[in-house]
Image (cartoon, rainbow, N blue to C red; front, top):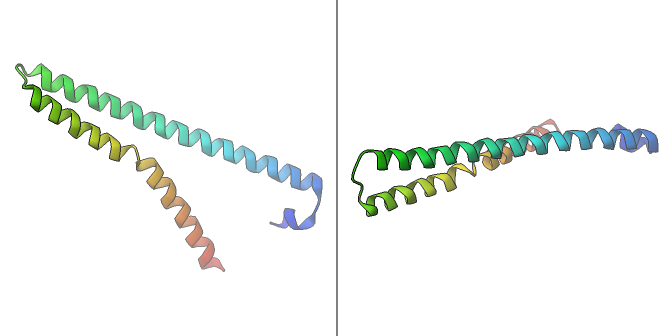
Length: 100
């Protein structure tokens, strides 16, 4: 905040460039979190189908029910990185409010 208050354009420009580097790092981290989550969930989906089919004769209704259960599970798990990110934001806001 002191950099913004000084009205020094060179220092402010440097400060904003540093902030953008952190934004890029956070964006990369978020992308890698979602990538890892999707890969794990796709593997989970494939393994669940292979295990169900590998046991022998499978009724189509049971396979459909299994697929729907896995899709619902995937739908809920894919939101975990967003929930964690929002929790971190709220924690940071809480710490800022408590320090005032």
